[in-house]
Image (cartoon, rainbow, N blue to C red; front, side, top):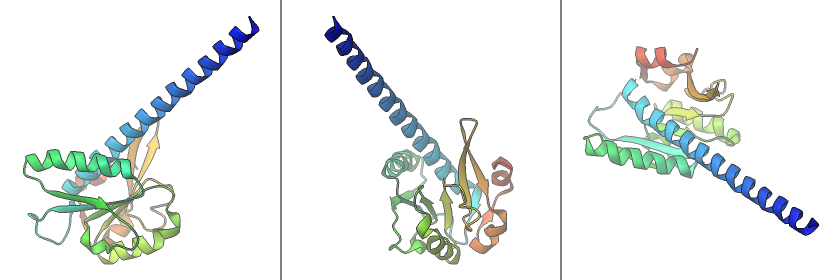
Amino acid sequence: MKYLKNTIRLLSLIALTIFFENTVSAQSLQDDTIRANYLIRFVDFIRWERPLNEPVSIGVMGSPSLLRELNSIAAEKQKSGREFRISEFTVEKDESTYDLIYVASGRKQVWQEIISRAQASSVVSVSDEAGFLDAGGLIEFSVQKNRLRFYLNLDAAEDYGVNLSSKLIQLSAK
């Protein structure tokens, strides 16, 4: 009888572990989908000093799952005539080949290098780690009340050499 109780407890624990792992994975996937949609939509509200008909180039550092989501969304957008180039971004790569770069959490040690090079090349920098705006980044994601929001560094926008639409400014968290 004692063996049966212990076996049931063990199976219950395994079932709960599997359930929570799947919940976390689903939540991460959902977060990546939301972030990817934001990144694609940001492009519509930011003006660079380049021809409008050129493909938009987005680089992603440190998030393979977000990279996959962006590629999926970009493929759908391409069907409607909007071309995107999505690729993995590393510190060694030249930022000037991108219009927008996303830096995942856990990359604070390279922020200053990335941000200064991004500003010099008019490349919009985005992250979801707290403090990114204070370091000079342009857009920072933040989860508030279970909703993904974004903040803008309006003081740095001029340093980036990009124009943010008034609609984007209105939509940002205050």
